[in-house]
Image (cartoon, rainbow, N blue to C red; front, top):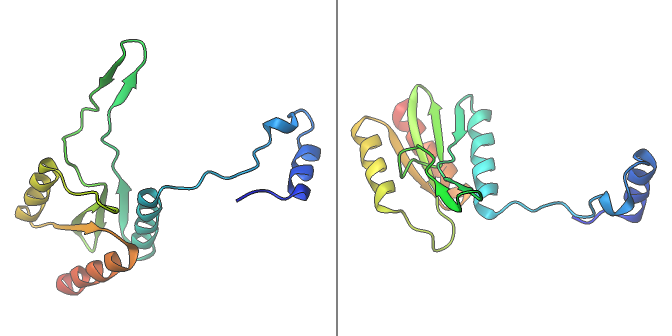
Length: 138
């Protein structure tokens, strides 16, 4: 969202030591996957549950010019939820994105352990699927 001239002038006056080129004119837009993740976490928190985003991506080391393994088990769900005393793993899949074999293995482990697993493609479908789980638990 671009800032208006008035907003830019306000920032310039508020922070006179910052050059004009240093004042941002746009806000970074979240990717659809990040936006859905954020919505799910906030929704679960509004229900009294806990939700955490899991980032298992490695880091690129420019010194060695190699990717460093994160140490996390491959295929962990993107969001881990604890709601009504139950564990729910949520994998975010937008567009043509599909589950990897590692993600399918984690899904199986969670279900075998008595937890729940959802694949979220959009927020409304997630809410419906979560409500089904809540109804089953209660």
